[in-house]
Length: 317
Length: 249
Image 1 (cartoon, each protein chain N blue to C red):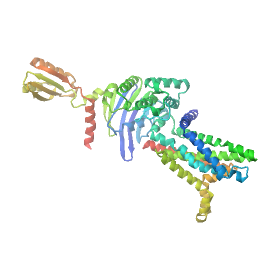
Image 2: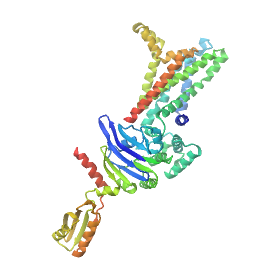
Image 3: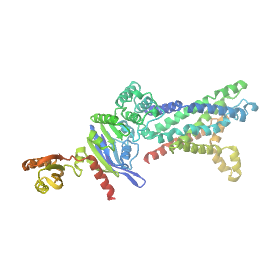
Image 4: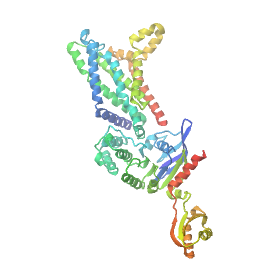
């Protein structure tokens, strides 16, 4: 549904987005990650036809955004970064205005307003003026606007920003549910959100895509992913080291001893061994009759990956 | 075409409801009518003139009143969209930017026309006191509406240039004041000796004052219509260019 090819945006001499390419299929939820100023919002503004790209192509449902903006925009629901809405209108008036611009009128418009008010929990404030609402309600009002025409493509810039934990949970569930039938791209700083509802994630830094894959694939890129922690008693540290180093799957082994308790950390030789290393160590412990207190395989954490990828880049320059 | 019209009308409706949702619109109407009434009867010397005509007592003041009030009506048109970031929302809707530009213009212009229509008691008054030339009154009203439209278009342009309404107001005021002054007789008489006839007549032809003058006298000339139309069209077109810059930056 969304195809982005070699997208570039320059502001003066600064390249905010530098050759970004990706695609999002129907039924996919793409998480868009990156530090502040990495070019996330700029990319989303180009996707939605607000900002013209310096070069590169964006097409939505086969329609190029720069060539046929109106047809492309019809397919997209967009929640901008600051979740703006007209403060002098009521929630209902605002949604009605957006629905009419989307070509809905009469009972279709009223049905659409009822539907999104239900989805975004706005029923109680429909007749309230937007400027009397709290931040969370304002945010959901703007989200409701993005859903009003039941679009095939959703572009959400920080959809859970400013919401309380319950609302965050609801919005994540909503995104996940809608992701089954739509193509969704959303940006966030919250990494657990990516694990909770994305089928794929992209990390962007300084305008360049630095990682692209499922959350599981990305987690494997963590330095400690797949490493095994073993804590035991009843064996000498050096003997344990010798046995562990003898395993064919094991790489570097680091050891700590506290009295009779030995803690070992074993890195896998190869990132792709998965849980095999843990099993091999378990078998070894059984045959050696070690008294195991803890045996645990590290999954790898997304924020470690995020930090490693994005700060490594900062250090380079 | 019908889709364009529907989009424009949707924007117009929103702007109008926004205008009347706050007391500003009513305050504006009251000030407009009081100010015009005061100027007509005291400074304009409506009764002292003893003429069944509105051109020098009533229409004379329109450019000055518009100069004060039209920038106040139009200053928020785009500045407020930019300040509240709703510009991003509006321009990612499936409408062409010119739909929004024309829709906003139309809403404020209809409002100004409403204010103008509410001055009808003066027409009744002059009709009761004598037998005026209704043709020149009608042409005066047409000219006044066009004049208001061109000042409004200038204001819409300055409003797109900034996120600050006050800056937009001041810029519009300066431009509109310039458009009046370059055809205002006391000014043109002053510079005629030093700058020469050709330059002054060129300057005068750029002035709203000069082109409105014909309407006041009851002359609806194609050239004057073209003048107001092109000032308005130019400003609205330039607004779209400015907005393109805002989106790119």
